[in-house]
Length: 120
Image (tube, rainbow, N blue to C red; front, side, top):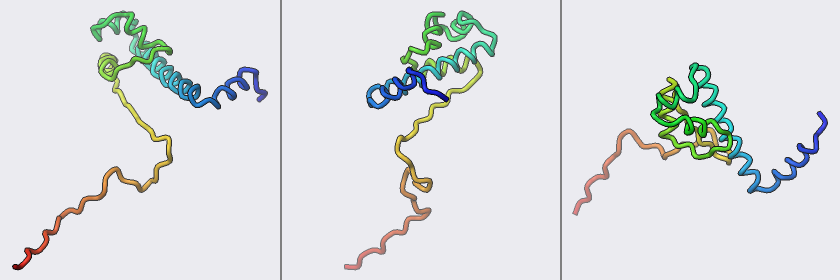
């Protein structure tokens, strides 16, 4: 596929780490906005209907569904999810590769052996 001027421009801009980070964050906000709007529509609800269920304003629901909005709180997402009969799932991923056999904590032995008492 032939690259457009925009494709070349974006590739150039993504070389800047600050721009790349902002671009990635914008994509995450876009994903949340699209999911919320789609779930609301699947439930057959208007923004007003959902706002009433969540006990907030239609403007707040509109903000949550806006791709440019980055102020999503976990508590508000949980309230919206409950009203839509869905669940919130948050996943944090490391940028560095992680070994498959790595553990979050060192293994703990089932039984701890006590040291024998020292004789005097």
